[in-house]
Structure formats: C-alpha cells, structure tokens
Length: 251
Image (tube, rainbow, N blue to C red; front, side, top):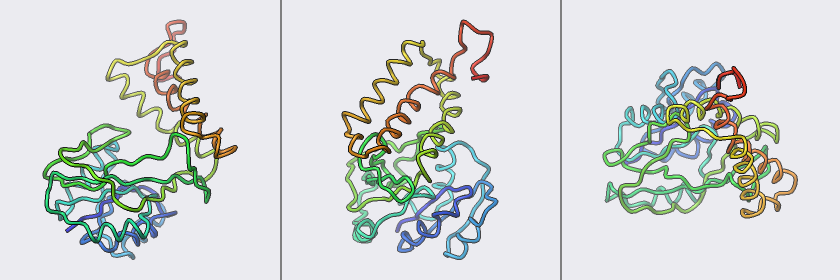
C-alpha cells in the first residue's frame, strides 16, 4: 500500500487536482505549514488526512511528512504537481515487492497554461520509494532521495504547474536564493565576480542551446536567464564582497 504525501503552504490553486490524481493511494497525507488560504478546506474536502508542522526546510519538512505516513511505500508530490492518467494507471499496476526499488517521475513544467518543453527545468526526480530503505536529504532546498537499489521510471508524467507567468519564473528562483546562500555559507562556498560571469554564461548556454530552450520561443529566453540567475545569485550572496563593508546578508 502507498501513502501519498504532500507538503503545502497556501497551495489552493492546484491542490484539488493534485489530490484527485492520487485518490487511488491507500492514504493521502497533507502536511501544512501555516496556510491562510483555502488549502486546509480543500484537503479535508478531498478526504486527505491533514497534519501541521512549522516549516523546517524542504528536506526536513518532506521527511516529517514521510514519518507521519501510515504506510512504508511513499509517493511524494508537491502541491503544484498533478500526476497524469498514465501515471495513475502505472501506479495502480506496480508490484511493490522489493523495498530497495524506487521510481522516478518525469516532470513537465508549465508557465501558466503553456508547457516549457525544453531548457533546464524538466527533470525526473525519485518520488516513489520505501521509507524503510531511504528518505529525503535534509537539505533546506533542492532536497532529493538517494536510491539504495534499482531505479525505474514510472510510466506517465507529472504536470508541474510551477509558475503563473514569465515574471514568476524569474521570481521563484530568486526566492530560493536566500535558502541556497545559507547552505553555501555553511559549506564555505563562494565565487569571484569572474567566476559568476562564467557560471551565468554556462547556465544560459546549457539551457538555451544545449537543451534547446530556443524552441520555446520567448519563454525559452526567460527560462535561460532564470537558469543563469539560479546559478549565480546564491553564490554571490554566500560570501561578503571584499571591496565593500556589506555582508552577504546585505546583498
């Protein structure tokens, strides 16, 4: 049996669709971190079990949801990720015999109603696993599950309604920068100005050219610019500028 777990805060926009897509799971658990919109109402109306936890960082928050689940097999989704019909059928037909196995879910990223088919944002993270064998990393951002055995890709995909529009595409990445900067400071990481220029150029080229982001038109340009900012902003914040008395927290 599978527990579907979703961490959320103010996720009313897509939560009903997210929950409807996992209603075939033995349990649906929503872990809320202080929503002030209709999130809790939507979750309870869908029959989900609702728990609360002040936000601990992305990795720790997801691990808390995993701990609260009633079953060892865990399907972890975000509150803007909707499993498609093919994925639902594949999930229902899985043989969950080996707890060391895990499955990746392909994510298709949307900006508003338009899919970004190329560039740096589409990936296939491990989202179905057995908690007796593995769990999420404790990273405050960009958490992941480490495979401890065979890894397969689940048929179907997840529609990731990550961004309202092009501005949100840029702002969302910037929103993670402070969390990433703290992580980099703890690791003693930083970069020179020249290093940041090189990283920005490389990230833009990878997204726009190597991963064919140019095929997404104007959104492909914005997506590549977002990749460049994501590759540099947190590193710039992580270390103080030697030419200025300002600290990294002032950036």
